[in-house]
Image (cartoon, rainbow, N blue to C red; front, side, top):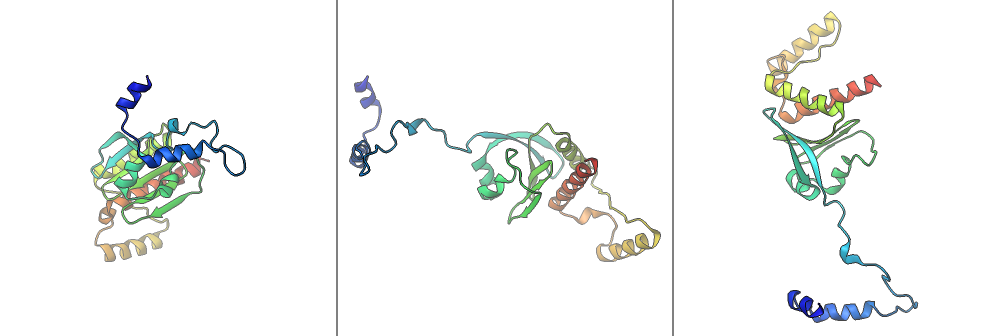
Length: 195
């Protein structure tokens, strides 16, 4: 068996052989370092695949499975930002604006918003599903709804200023990222209202 192992495994450099000899010896304190630990079989943390819901700018959605490092490269985010989305940890509500993405952690909605897509952690929570349906509805209809304050003089004044600045009272001028963020904020407010 040892002969077969030596033939199949590549040769070890001399430095690795010397290192093995020193670790098996007792240290100055008389204790053996790493005694009883087999570190070769340990799995690295954070390498598992996670299920994400991807919604693109046209409202199409699909479920994808991506590991943490692929997601970091895809969205150009550091690992500490992805930690906010982990369902095992409880963080206060946070919206992080990064160079190429917006990381959103609002109550039940935990997502990454880029210029081309929204990536949500796949969950069976009804608020996540409502968020996806509402975002798809707004993206496919092409026309969003504008919140109008109550009261005739406030409504008249705000619409006039809004029309002067942007030319039309509909939020079609908003980029995809802000429309997705708006739906996330509305969903979080709905969740808090129900509580």
